[in-house]
Length: 364
Image (tube, rainbow, N blue to C red; front, side, top):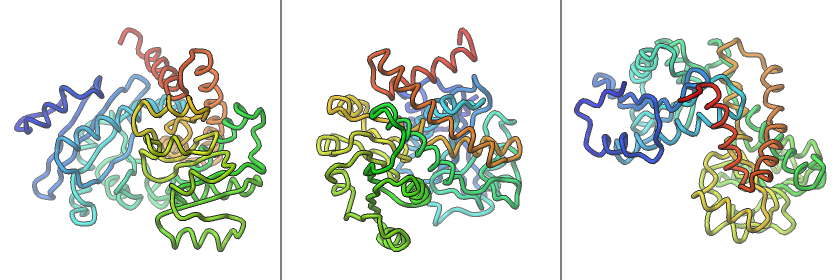
């Protein structure tokens, strides 16, 4: 059910002609009293209720918001399938600048829209939304994760996200060098925020040499003061050119791997927490042509979604960590499938995810 009454023509065109097709349901939400305008997209529920976060962002147009929701929902189907979760993929976007229009009334109205889906969509935090926001949404909707521990949630998921990326790195090392240890490997981390700084802790504990950069120089300064062995460089352009760099970990914005960065990248492995690292599909072939192993981002950064899914069953950190540790085996399986089929790792991951979804709903 997609209510498109009165929707602008560009929104309708995006809905029905998007190359991110196959979505089961798209809901356009509006609450005039609070100023809420939102899009909820459910891509595939073969494995179970759709699970994905709520993004709050000042889109240039409603059509852009719809396109982003469709793209993100599709990505969550693949991420949840590869994480071994019994959840399909969904995503919601709220249109507007969260610093200007986010209010309790708006979040409550949004919660009512999510609740109206009757459990077909489970929401969580994403860009522009936080644990405190999910606590508000949960007052109107029980299908809300990413809440604070005081409100029955698990809180910040960055610890397990970083742990999963670390396991992906170990799997990459095993595949490429025949040994999962990262001791004495040089790892460059771009972005040392919530996830990145936890990843650095794992790397240092194992004896890796760590080089970092972040646009927030105060964050870098605090990290290097706490860990004097960490080397800081000016920017990402400097980081990807570091001599003898073994692993590059993009942990900030998407699109980090593009036509400009790949030709000068010195690392043998790319494995990071950022979403949508490939600027376009052809980038992975460029990486392969240069002998650079790419660990698919949506596979290795799945620790966070593993955590929020676990909230639905009563959060248990040890149980979640055990599930996140399996990212090591999943990543190895993807590399093996890529070699077997003669395709890049991201394409192999897509095939495995699609196979799992198809087996859950034969003939669909």
